[in-house]
Image (cartoon, rainbow over all chains, first blue to last red; front, side, top):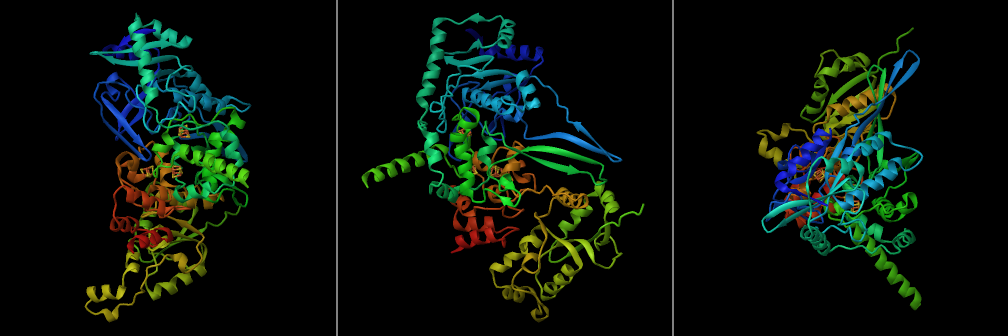
Length: 376
Length: 259
Ligand code: SF4
Ligand code: SF4
Ligand code: SF4
C-alpha cells in the first residue's frame, strides 16, 4: 500500500495519459455528478457531495475538499462499455447482391477512475452477460479487456445505498487494477493506493510513491467502517428468489402498477440492465440499410411484442418482470443476483418506487399468509 | 423495364398553424429525394398544381372545428388509401381544444362584432373522432425526421421506427440528467410519447408533453408526485392542458384536478 498526496494526483493522471489511456471519471454537469472525460484533478467534483432520497438527487457543497466524497450518480460505466446507441452494420444493395459491412469501432483504452465497489460487481455481471457464454459481444469484450479500473473506497453512503445487503460493498475487495482510499485528516489530504493486477502494478511502478505507514492504514480502515455504519437501507435476501417466484400472482404487482409510470428510468440507470432493441433504417433510393442497436427496457410495451401482440400489456406484469429478473431469475440465468444495491433505480425513479420496499412487501405478505394458513 | 408508378402524396390542412406541413418543406436536403420517390400531387403550401385523387398517402394536419370541416374530412378519407394524421391538432385537437373546457359561444360573443356569421363547433376534435386513421405522427410540431422516416418506411415496405415509449428513454439514452429528480422541475416526460429526442430536458427544462400521452400513460401517479413537489390543483390542471389537453389521458387528469 502506497501513499499518493492529493496535490500530486495529476501525477497519476499524467502517467495514465502517457500509457495512452482515455481517462473517464466523475465530474459535475448540469447539477449532477456524471462520468465524463477527465483532463486534470480539477475536473473532479472537489468540495461537493450528493444527497439522495427516493426521487430526489441534489449536489451541495461539502465541508471538505475531498475529490470523491459522494456516491453513484445517474450514469454508470455501461455508457462507455455498452453505449446506448450503436450501429451494428450497413447493408448495400448492388444489383441483386447484398453486401454486409460490419461497423468497426475504436478499441479505446479507457481508464475508469472512481469506480465503486458495487459498480465493479455490476461490470462483472455484465461481463457474464456479454461474453460469459456461447455468444460473445466482441465490442464490449474488447473495450472491457482494454479498460483499467481505478476503484475508490466509498467515504460516505447515501440513504438509497444497500450494498451491504447485496454483498457488493462498500469496501473494494476484488476486480480492480488500482484502488484508492481518500483520507482527509488533520490538515493532511492523501490517498492510499494499492494495485490488484499486473496492469495496476505497471502503473504504480511508474509513480515512485512512499509506502503507507501503520497510522495511514488504520485511517483507511476507519473510512470504510464509517461508511458501513452509514448504510441504513437493507434488503433481506435470504430465500428471496423462492419467495418472489412463489408470488407471481400476488396483488403487490397491481398495487405497484398504480404508482409505476412504466417510464423505464430504473432500467436505464441500472448498471446491470443490458436489454436492447434493434431498428433497421433504409435510404430513400433503396440501396442501403443500417441496423442500429439501442438500449431498451422491459417497461416498454414493444419490448415484449411477439407476433400477434405484446406479452406484457399490464404495467404490473412489466414491473414484476423487472423485479423478479433482478432478484430471482437472474440467479438461474447468470448465477448471481442482477442487483448490486447501488440505489440508482430508487433515486432516479420519478415517483420514488423502491425495489427494496416492494420486495419486502412480498416477504411480509407471504409470511402473513403462511401464518394464517397455519392457523386455519 | 416499365418504371413503377410513384405513390401519390396529398397534404391536407384543417384548424392548425401550418407548422407541421412546414416540417415537410423544412426537409430541405431530403425534399428533392422525397419528390423523386413520391409524386407530390396535392400540397397547396408547396405548389399550386393540384392533381385529382385518389391518393396513396394523405397527410392530414389540423383539428375539426367547423361543420364544413367535419364533412370535408370524410371526402378526404374516401380518396386516401392511407391516412396519416400529423401533429397535436390532428391527433388530439391541438391547443385550440382548450375551448372544449369552456363555452365557445361566450368566446364568439366577446370576439366578433357579428357573431351570427360565425359557424363553429363547440369542440375542437382530433381527426380520429371523425374517420378511421391509419397512423398518427405526434408532436407540436412533428419531428421532420419522423415524417421522413414514415415516408421512407412506406416506400421500402417496412415498419417505421416510431417507438411509443416515454420521453425518459430518449432522455436517458442521450445522457441527460433528469431535471425532475435533480432539480425538482415539473416534467411530463414519464407519461409522454417519445419522438422529440428529449428536446426540453436537453435544454434543462421539463417536458411540456408536445407528443401527447404515451401508451399506459399513468398521469395520476405523476400528478400525485407533482402534488408532493408542492404543485397546487390549478398548476396541475395547467400542466396537463397544453397542446394535447384533449387527449384522453391528459384531459381526464386535468379534469380530476379541476373539481
Ligand atoms: S436494481 Fe436498482 S439498486 Fe439494483 S443494481 Fe439496478 S439500479 Fe442498482
Ligand atoms: S419503477 Fe419508477 S423508474 Fe421504473 S418504470 Fe416504474 S416509475 Fe419508471
Ligand atoms: S427530465 Fe423528464 S423526460 Fe428526462 S428522465 Fe426526467 S422525467 Fe423523464
